[in-house]
Length: 116
Image (cartoon, rainbow, N blue to C red; front, side, top):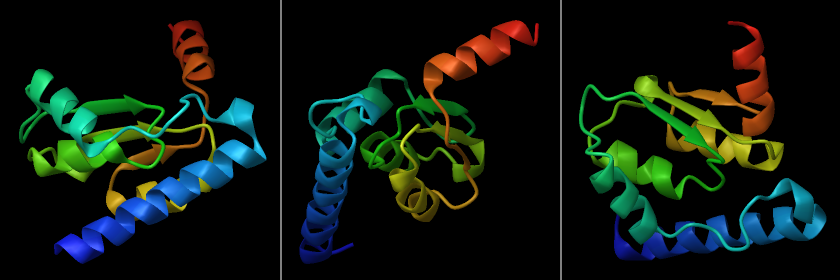
């Protein structure tokens, strides 16, 4: 992706985040969207490479998703959880083949604990 396209995509992501936050502040867990730098740091710290599985809670605009993909993690090895459905189309576009769940991370934890 060239720089102009990357900059435009970043602006679109920020605008989506701002719209979601303004429309429903309690549905967005972060005060500001994560940056690609924090995503890259997370992918590096997790030692994410091809063959790794990733469960991303609060995937939002996909800053971490993009960096896990860039590190070699296959979309099919990713589960992306985001409670705000406005982010679903973006996440599905970023990581075709990933399992994208519209759910709250706390609710998922409770469901998984209850299932044994």
